[in-house]
Image (cartoon, rainbow, N blue to C red; front, side, top):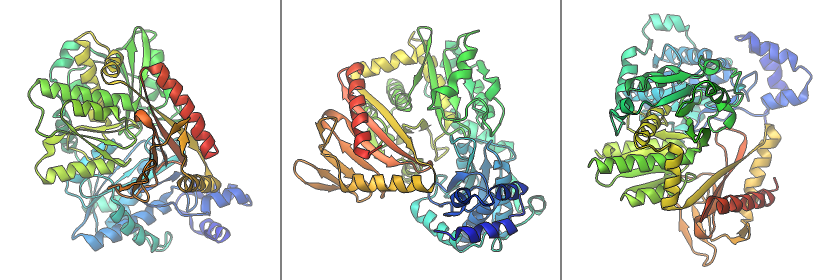
Length: 572
């Protein structure tokens, strides 16, 4: 643990670049708990970069922690690449623009060429820019769908996906050698622009991105015919311009935007949790439907890499889960491509291990392979890159994770709510021309393949004590795996940390051929099961439940039993 008092004193003397930090440090003077939370550790840098509460201290997001990470990144890039370059983007969060320019100044001072967007843009556009400019790395300042008090710093590799474990570990080694007050080289942003060390990204790059997104369509012209009406909310984030532009280009003219959530605002005044997984973010949009109904409500999170929808069915708006949208994408894309004779040889659908198994059932029905990867879209990006190297990019149909992230096309190597919003609207328009709502289409899929009910339990653990409690929970579960869950025998136990999958009946152990991850999985008879993991971006334990049954009522009952038993097993 850090020397708390020494660090507090040091920061009080040296953190002069941002008046907000000094004000905060003065306000917590003498408050041991507040000082402890800010200084007991350094923000950890991993494959997801940095993420934390905005404020003063080593355990906070501020210009000093950002600059230290950037100096470490610059040192890493200069050791690995000749004439390295970095693309930078930022979202609507508090201080995102400040952090992005500060990082650009550090890179410029270290001889690293910078390409930076002149205004906030979605995360997938950063991934696109890395590849467009053939950069050595990329940085986006975002905390995705976290509450307003958070911000983050994500690093990308030359392929356009988030850093791999090996690159992140090397970068972290360099970061640890940087004194955040005296060991960082900096350069004035405007001077670096004038000197050509920092270059603004032009509109032609945006245009190239849009053109690639449009290639992902499978039923061109259907939107003009359907007369689809859409309400869209960017949740005060980056999606406002790109999503509206792409919808206009595919022929959807009837798009109304939620005014309270239209413009960038890192305080997220109408949605304190700007996450399209949460029902509350749709309230303003649903209120708009009292005057005029819409076929579909679309919500993208602040950095526009996730998208959620509410669909009109019999006069009511029903929220679709991330799993359900992924399931519908799989059916829609594979069936359309097959019908058109455009389904490639050996098609592949890519999902995470916590995403619905129903995706695999549908893929199998169309002769498509399913790749099950760890949570983290970088693994999907890596798979696409490997296909590209073999000249087999066309095999990739769609990639998805249950937390509302999707990608079709090889233009980005991260989840992309711009292309996903476009395809959701195209899909809704296609089924509308057949007199089918998306809700009814989902019920048809369940009727055809069976009821796979997926649910997620989230349990938050804030601060130092919370982190320790999460760690203890995972250790206890790993050392004492449950033999039964909700009265059903656990048939297999998979530990992705030790790469072992154990058949509980025979004791046979097989190897899991994925990177190590702190994930535990328990399979039950009939396809039901539970997966437990700590979140990689938030102080939460996540429990993913799959209940397979004859109908929804029985699946819901099974879900309740599994949920109650898992809380008991984990002592929550």
